[in-house]
Each structure stands twice: as C-alpha cells, then as structure tokens.
Image (cartoon, rainbow, N blue to C red; front, side, top):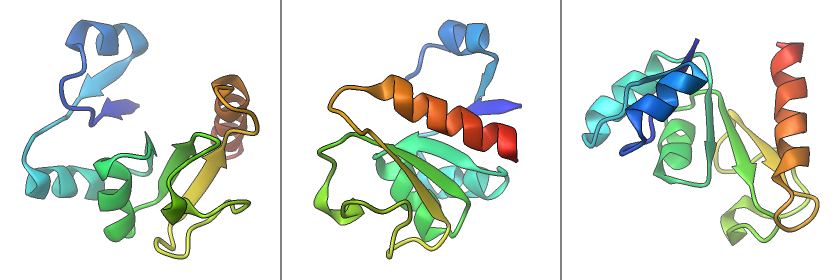
Length: 108
C-alpha cells in the first residue's frame, strides 16, 4: 500500500495512483504517521529530514545538483543512518532515478 504525506496534493490524483492521503500540517502528527510506515520515499523536503531524524527507513530522490548536505557520489547520508539516496546521473533525468527506485522496491 502507498500513502501520501504530501500536503496539498490533489486527492483525486492520488486515488488514481492508488495512494491514500495521510498528509497533515502538524509536524508532530506527521512524525507519528512516519513512524507507522515501512519506508518513506520522498524528494528533498522537510519530510526527508523529519523521517531521517526519526531514523525511519527513508529513500530520498535527489536532483543532480542537490543541496550540499546530501554531499556527492554517495548512496547514503552521514546525517541520517537510515537514509538511502537515489541520485540523478544527468540533470532533469528522473526516469533513471525512478528505474533505480523501482528496482530497489522489487528487491524488498
């Protein structure tokens, strides 16, 4: 099952993708919801940092020129021991990132 933590996402679009909306604007409640998930898959947002700080399994999709905190050339993060990083190899090429993510999901 897939859940969306994305605040403001279109509920109808999420339903078409098979996602259940569990978003909230309350950080404490978001943290509680993250703790109930097997894994958080996200881009570089507050959700990535909150899930990482909670030591929840977190997979972060990063653009090629991502924020310096994610460093470069790594699949992990020194800041969050449970984070796994999926990086663009070329600017704007999300297809390869999604393919890597899909392969990792199939391997679970």
